[in-house]
Length: 215
Ligand code: ADP
Ligand code: ZN
Image (cartoon, rainbow, N blue to C red):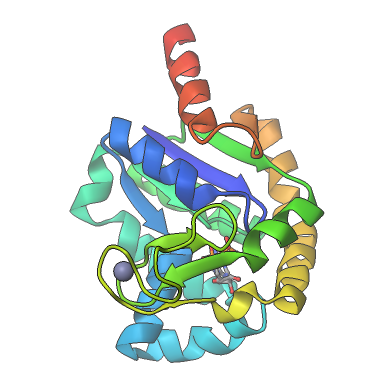
């Protein structure tokens, strides 16, 4: 299975990805995670990307496209993949179509996680993440047992720099300008599947299973 998870920042792409991964043999490819791990390792790519990310802007297309082309060639992606955070612009979507054409592969579905901006702001300002293992917490819904300390690994639980309200608003406006046009792009390809992002945790999984049953 090859799918794309589309949706505003904070729509819950990561959470949905986890439940899909548990059921299907797909490589979970998250551009945000790849970029953050490059920053952590101090690579040149990471150093270039960090400025954009902290400002809530998109990392330039050529950088992302080159990174993804390499990633999609890796062995684990042969079984299938789930793209989380990519593509985010029409240029990236076109580049992805070309990469897949070259590999003679087709997308099965583009899941659009639908959510209102105000719901996103509420979600993201309360999000916390473990600096060490990446575990996600929420100050309202899922706090760590001890404030600031990860239940899983004891690492520091912090707020991402780009989860501050002004940066979130900026990311939302970037989403509406640059990423929302993809809804139309994939709608025209006939592979768009809208899912309410404020519903159940397994909403996407259920829709995919239904789709499979009807295929
Ligand atoms: P979210 O989905 O919550 O916005 P991500 O972890 O997917 O967060 O991305 C964090 C940041 O990484 C983005 O705001 C952007 O700066 C950068 N980024 C991630 N994916 C892409 C992409 N496909 N194109 C450009 N920039 C990206
Ligand atoms: Zn941890």
